Image (cartoon, rainbow, N blue to C red; front, side, top):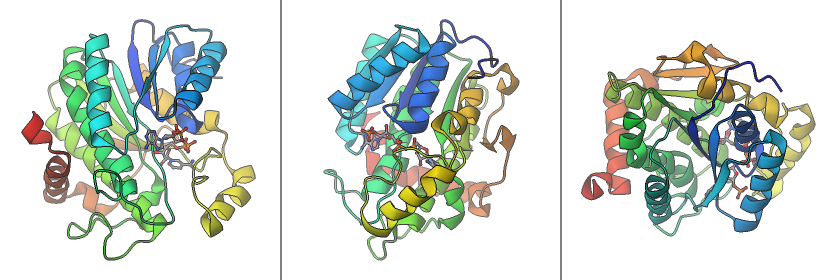
Length: 289
Ligand SMILES: NC(=O)c1ccc[n+]([C@@H]2O[C@H](COP(=O)([O-])OP(=O)(O)OC[C@H]3O[C@@H](n4cnc5c(N)ncnc54)[C@H](OP(=O)(O)O)[C@@H]3O)[C@@H](O)[C@H]2O)c1
């Protein structure tokens, strides 16, 4: 593994979705660089197994597990509260947990599941941890998006895909929302020392898509041998989390350590503000703040 990014000793990192795939590979790499890593998972057995693996592979015992089902806003809030109680600093927040679903379902909060986990959960978690990130500045927020953003359209009248649901376009819309969120967050954080960036990890052979049946499951099974390894897929994320090369760099979307362009709507400040306001509304953020 390439650890030439620089030391992470004394830095506290929280990574969602780090029980598997890109998130787990990132946790191993950052812990190996000396970071104190908080692994977030939703399942106790998978979480404990990943925790041991990450400690073992990184030779770092300063890795801890926090459990939260990010589809449930109450659990996102509990996760943030527990983190704030336990830790007085947060240097890097990695919003990585995500999924694609071939069939429309709703969370226990009554929100379309892909939108809830991929967009609203990172939106809420980041906002709840923002003060701690600001106190720890210079600090970084990194959100794992995807070039699937190109298939996505942000329809403010139907963000929860009630009228029409197709798995990949809905997934693409949530990944476009990750970029819009990042660009808007970077604007709002100007002058605070907290940066916000996002990335496309490439096509990576992980557990991604395995929660589905039928053609979507078949697609991921057939494609997996041709995909990047989780370690390769994590490279740009690890670089964004740790490299001095991106000190102060904010409001950008990367692939293979290079800035790339997002869909046009992501550069529209009014659209980004609208998404932010709807997200505040759907998470009750202003009420609780
Ligand atoms: N793989 C690709 O080709 C690819 C390409 C572009 C972007 N991405 C993005 O990369 C990110 C990581 O995906 P991956 O490929 O590493 O997939 P993965 O192996 O399926 O990992 C996804 C992680 O998210 C967690 N997660 C899912 N739903 C959750 C929930 N309700 N609450 C808490 N955690 C939850 C999973 O936990 P469990 O272990 O409990 O399931 C797992 O740790 C995603 O945001 C994805 O959109 C992936």
